[in-house]
Image 1: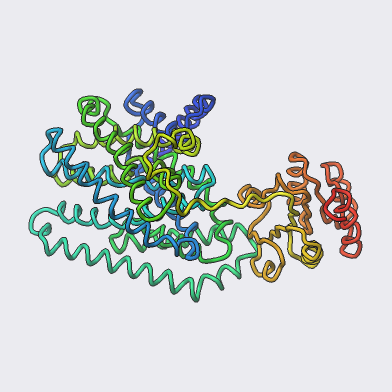
Image 2 (image 1 turned 180 degrees about the horizontal axis):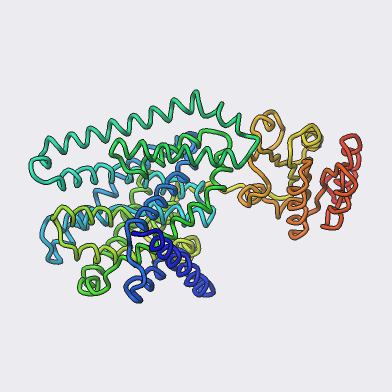
Length: 541
C-alpha cells in the first residue's frame, strides 16, 4: 500500500468518525458505538474503506496504548486488596461462559470445534470498551471499576494462554504437535517473567532517578513515558507475546511512581485517536450478508453475553462478599465480547479450524453487545435504583459496598510549591483549612500539609482532580505568565475567586483585565493581602 492510500484511509476514518459522532451526539449515542457505525457506513455500506494492514496496525496500537493507560491506574496500593476476588471471579466467569457458549453453539447445530471457538470468543469482556466506559464516567478508581479491571486482567492472562495454544495449532505439520505447543507456552511464560523482572528492576533503580531528572518538563516526562511503553511493546514482540501485554507491564511499572495521574491525563488524546481507528476498522471489516445468514445464532449468543454472563459475574461477586449494587454495576460494565474474540476466531480461520463465516457472526455479536453496553453502562446506577426491588435477594444484599468517592468542596487550591506557595499552604493548614497543593515536581510536594496533586494546571484532568469548580479560592504562586493567564481565565469562567503572583506591573494589568480578584505583587507583601482576601471571601475569620 502506498503512502497516499494510507493517508486516504486515515482521512476516511477520521472524517467519518467525526461526522457520525457529531450527527449522533444530540441523541446521546456513545462515541464507541458512533465509531462502529461510522465503520459500517464507510465499509459494507459505501465501500469506501477496507481494513488494510496499516489500519490494522493502528488499531492494534490503540489497544496496546489503552492497556498502557490501564496499567497507569494500577499502583500496588490500589490493587493489593482485589487480587483474590478478581482471580476467583475471572477464572470462574471464563470457565462458566465457555461451557455456556459451547453448549449453546452445539444446540444451534455447529460442530464441536467451531462451537468451542464460539464459546471461547464470548467468554472474554472487552478491555477497550470497559476502560473507556469507566474512564468516561470517572469510575476507574471505584470499587466496581477496580473489580472489573481486575477481572479483565485475569481474562487477559487466560487470553494469552489460549492464543498461544491456537498459534501452536495453526503451525501446521509437525510443528503443531504437543511438544511445539508446550514449547510455545514455555516461551511465553519465560518472556512474561523477563518483562516483569525488567520492569521491577527499573522501578527500583532506574525510573525514579530518570524521571526526577526530567520532572522540570511535563513534555519530556510524557515523551519518555511513551518511549518506555514502546520499548516494552518491542520487547514483548521479541518474546512472541502480545504487544498489549508489553504495554500493560510498562504502564504498571510507571504506576508505582508519583506522577502517574499526570501521565494518565496526558496520554488520553493519543489513546483516543488510535481507539477511534480501532472501532471504525471493526465496523468496516464486517460482512453484513454473512452476518444476516447467521442472525438466529447471533441473537442467541448476544443473549448469552448480555444476560447469562452478567448474571454469572454478579453471582460470583456476591458470593465473595460484595454488595448486590457493586456486583450489579461490575456485571453490567462487563457485558460485551472482547476485541480478542475477533483475533481468536481470525486465527482459527487462518489455521483452517473454522469457517470464515464465524468472523461475521462474532462481528455481529460484538457490534450488538458493545453497542448495548455502551448505552446501558453509563446508566447502570439509575437502572439499579429503578429495578432493585424486583431483583433476586442475592442482588439486594449488603456487603462490601462502593466506597464513596471524596466530594471535595469549599477548599483552597494552591498552585506552585515555591517558597511563597509553601508558606501559603502552611498558613492555611494552621487555620484548619482544606488545601489542595499542585506542582509538577513531586519532591516539592513532600512535607506539604495538604492533599497533593502532581501535574500542571493546563491539564484538564488535574483541574478535575482538584475540583476547581467547587473551590472557594484558587491561589497561584507561579511566575509563569501563560499558565497564570489560563488559570485566571478558567477561574473567572467558573466564578471562583483567584489570586495570582504578579511579578511585574505589565503582567499585573493583564491579570486584572482577565478577571483576577487579587494580585500578590511580591513575596514580601503576598501573605498579608492574601489573608485579607481570604477573609473577604469568608475563608478566614
